[in-house]
Length: 324
Length: 242
Image (cartoon, rainbow over all chains, first blue to last red; front, top):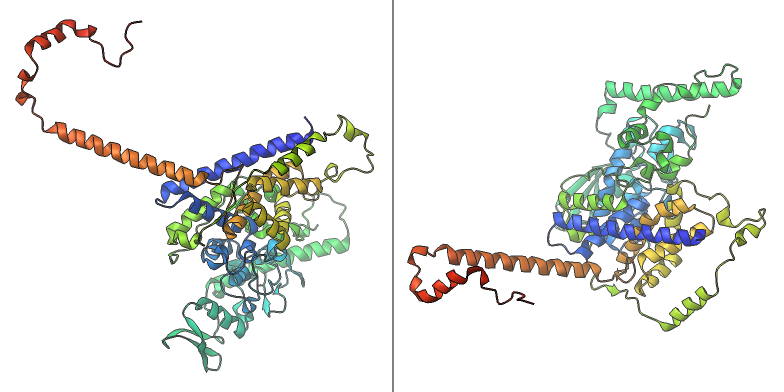
């Protein structure tokens, strides 16, 4: 039997197995949730799987009228990946519609850049694909361990690596424009908010009212961020230590590069500074999954909390710390 | 519309179907309604495969053209290999998946996929064709092709769902899920009926007092015959003597 015939035969087996697994899962879900038809469960599975496979890009690809985009479920299921990975590195929410657009400001991957919107487009520019996760390790375009540029032209910067924003996965509040904050508030209150009834009651303070003229939200675009752990002394220490570690690693690596290859082999290079690797969430994840960190990207894992799929190829392609 | 009461639980699995199943269950548990997850968009387009003699003839003529002569591949110039004979462009399955799904999510490709699904093409066949083409282009290795079967099939299924098509997954299994539902429903009803029947039987025999049974209904002579013949008495349904 030739190679191609063998391939076809093997592939047929695989697709048959996939169908069996699909049926099994449909039955499994049906056992838990009664009175839902199998075809409905299949639809839900297909939607959830597409979002997982595309890292959320399917939400925009299917447009604003589809099952994916019109449901809150897509963004909800991926919200965990944001908290797990700290993926709020996208900008440009201002130009986007709520739901899908907002979701893409929070997460996304390579597909978000390449997938078209064949079922009718929503949203505007997707912004850069730079992510907090990648920024933690590389810094952004401006240089290693420098604050990253997230949404080009949006006025939003990705958090400084090891800062509270980077570690908690939040955008730097201080770096958000008032327009950005207002747009976010609009997204939040779209269902109850009547566009004609929001006004500035004080400089920088906006009130959103519903159709009955009840105040639904007051947005203070001049307010300072809430004090969290990283604002406390202990938090600052953690943040500073992280930054210092990063700086030391790269200073050492740079010095080594300037001085040339040391004759003594086996010496600890600058970039091999201890500490950073213990902060590496991927290593913890790999240990939990029982896989080797070296081949983490070769493992096809799926879910809303799988760093290798969430970081996607951007992380895979990045310049790593180990440059020595 | 259901509102989620909590954040989604983290889900990681080596199996996409399982991951999707867990996410759906988690969503339902968090307060989403099935309609929020998979909204109903009216009656679906039936993607029924129709028999066409013309297509069958074409297929037969193609297969009659014959395959390569054994050893033909070895006669090819090694300086000019086929794309699939060279190292694949994507060695990382995740990168390969992004490339494949990226090309599926283009308007022209999507249009063709939707039209094929509506005309009865099966998801597995489309997935095979797409991945096979990628392998032929030298983009992926056969191993990666196998690994990507499940995610690519799910992507095509999602496209079918989005286009509101009732599609075939493998072969002509359009109504398989509905038929199974019907079978289950029938079985459930049958079981219910059996249970009720058993209950009735139990209820009917429970109140019978054996001491009050009138033994004079059967004449004593017949009872004596029964006792006498005993094992010789055969059932009406028994096979009888040969």
